[in-house]
Image 1 (tube, rainbow, N blue to C red):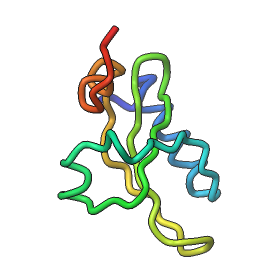
Image 2 (spheres, rainbow, N blue to C red; image 1 turned 135 degrees about the vertical axis):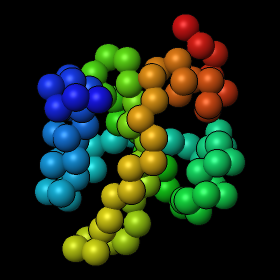
Image 3 (cartoon, rainbow, N blue to C red; image 1 turned 90 degrees about the vertical axis):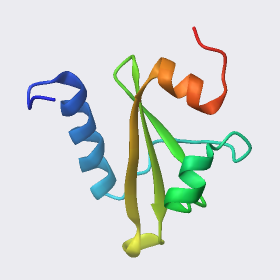
Image 4 (spheres, one colour; image 1 turned 60 degrees about the horizontal axis):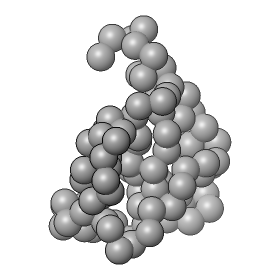
Length: 90
């Protein structure tokens, strides 16, 4: 991905917002969480953030308040996201 790629620019903007301790993502209900996040990352919270019209950023938040750390886990297309979480694809 080049530095001028619109998706990369949007992910960089989201990362900056996270540094300001702003969690603007949507909580993903626990039931459809894929095993890969549970096994590999041992997540206890999982969020998604829309990146442009066709991409979803998957992340988790660990710690609280000033100790809060955001872990970016995946950047998926909308179709990949639907498939991974078991939603019907469009």
